[in-house]
Every structure is written in C-alpha cells, then in structure tokens.
Image 1: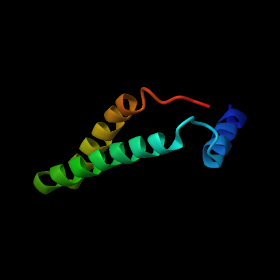
Image 2: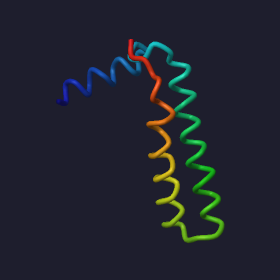
Image 3: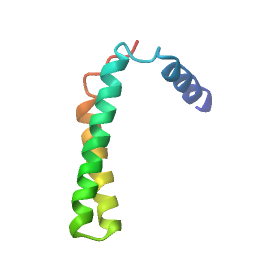
Image 4: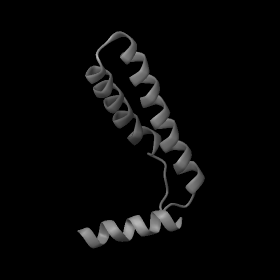
Length: 73
C-alpha cells in the first residue's frame, strides 16, 4: 500500500500522473479558493472553529465535483 502511494506521489511530482496537469492544478486551486472564501466569510460571523469546519466541509465536498473529469495518463 505504501509503495503504491509513493509511486503515485512520484508520478504526480514528475508531472506524469494526469493527462492535463494544468487543468488538475486549476481545479485544485479553485477548490482551495472556494474553501478560503467560505472560511473567511463564516469567520466574520462565527467562531474560528466553526469557520474551519465550514471551510473544510465545503472544500472537501466540492473537490469530487471539480475533479470528476480528470483523466489519468
């Protein structure tokens, strides 16, 4: 299991895991940006712990939708 994870990590950092690395990077960045916006927005009206939960939940829920069309090399 560890060897498989290490192999995938090596391919990812070498740029050989996905067919379109630019699209994957953009989708990861978009999901992170949405999480940051939600976290800051909720943080303005709620405690920090609630903002962290909301940001993590939203960014975790949005990633599968953003990455549903990603093709592996």
